[in-house]
Image 1 (tube, rainbow, N blue to C red):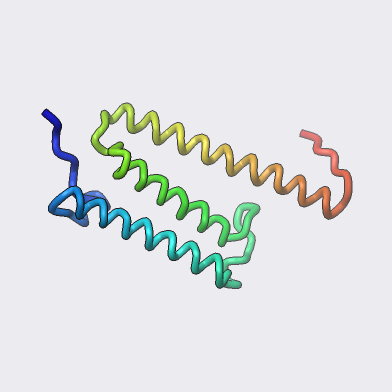
Image 2: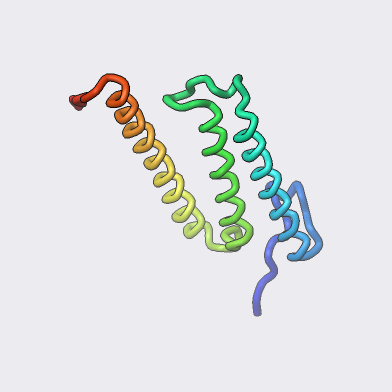
Length: 126
């Protein structure tokens, strides 16, 4: 016998009466996040163009919003919330590590390419 899926999001702050309502609720949440990303990408506010940890603040916002969308897709549509705690941790921790590693590689290599275009050949001495 299959068990019922939890019908809430935001740690129980928003509750739904059926799976169909929950799917629509998560879809609306993901759509709102995507709309915010598109609007920020179109208008590119000058206040978000400052450097934060090697990248523009706007780029950090895009990365964070993309992670939020990936989390909700995995958590609700792929039913990760209904899995064993150990499996959830294994998937989430591995994903977080890989995302942070990717961001590090992008920042490191992007900075190097920027320096090469700016100054010519650059030798890195680690």
